[in-house]
Image 1: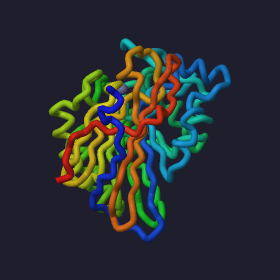
Image 2: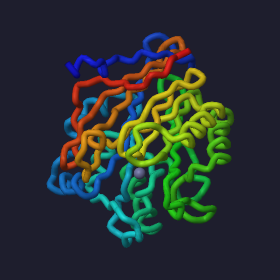
Image 3: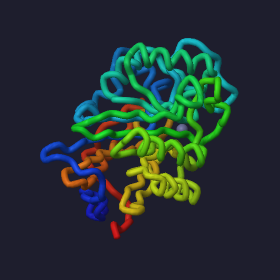
Image 4: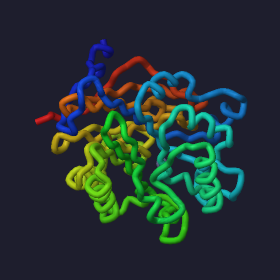
Length: 315
Ligand SMILES: [Zn+2]
């Protein structure tokens, strides 16, 4: 039977990282692209919660991170591009409930212009929802989200490498952090060394849509990130999940796929990954990938399958 082909695996890969005291594992959850306009926006406006079926998995972690692939605002006009996403303000309450922080580094947070983007920054701050990968200027857009858990400092950096580049933050203008090699290397080194972070994850928005394998450019950038000091790379944007690689003992999840998103009809685009990364005692790291199925309204449910399709060898 096809079912026996063995896509169901529990991954227990280990990788050297910061040592932790007994009994103090740190659990991090990452999901892919969270688009709260269109179908999910209608779910939210009707008073329902598109995260309800995955609530336990999102909240059962020390840090939960997602990519907010829309703007939340009432102002602005759509930019001249094929798809523009503006989510209702009721979304803020849900983000606060489920996420420790959200990345704004993507190709939709600027869909309604810089004014709407700035309105979103203010709304996120009012609701005490930390964000990264975007900010009021270049400097703040490139700052990491940092939290201390069990005495260890954990950081996440967000970047977008998919056009339009006009969404980029400038010296004196709000916007997102662009995936610029020199800036990425500088931010990783600064965050690890100067800010004394023990474990750093880069969360890039990149790659070609609908490609199940990462591009040579993604591979080159991921390696550069790890060579610069990143402990893991967790990507998104292609609307499908991509392959996994272990480089220098550090995992690279090229794309987690969609998480809350409608407008897709085939299995690959309606499948996403909820990644649990656990920093263990003695410095080991393990991970587990839970598959989610996304319905026609863009609402995810855990399929019950723990899946890993990478063929990389820890050696
Ligand atoms: Zn995207």
